[in-house]
Length: 147
Image 1 (cartoon, rainbow, N blue to C red):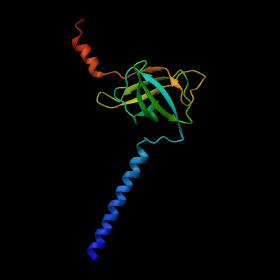
Image 2 (cartoon, one colour; image 1 turned 135 degrees about the horizontal axis):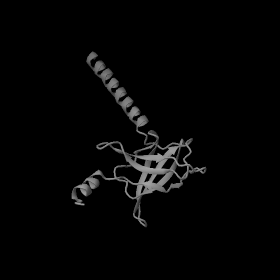
Image 3 (cartoon, helix red, strand yellow; image 1 turned 180 degrees about the vertical axis):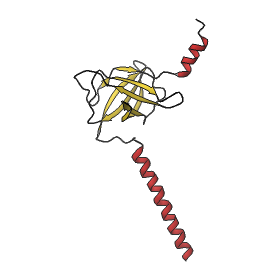
Image 4 (spheres, one colour; image 1 turned 135 degrees about the vertical axis):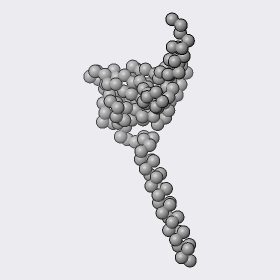
């Protein structure tokens, strides 16, 4: 009887630790969309390197996440929908680009604020975009270009 009580106690501790890990992962993942954010749209030539859940940063600080990626079949451009914190006002002439964390690091969406007095609202599109730059394509161009 004492042996099964000890096993039950150890099992309860293991389940509590597992529940703690799941709670922590849910809090730090940033995948949930809450009422504390609003959605913006940007069209890119290429969204290579990002996916749903990728960070959106302004001045190096995470201010949102990418929530959807799809192809605009009329223009053949990639359409990215991302959220931004609700209290953060983004000027309408801001630049949005896909930046790399380093040579081997991941990519993220970077917002560079513009100077306009008009701010974007929920669902608006930011038109000044720069897609991801493929390091492999750059190296191939450099290696094969004789002049």
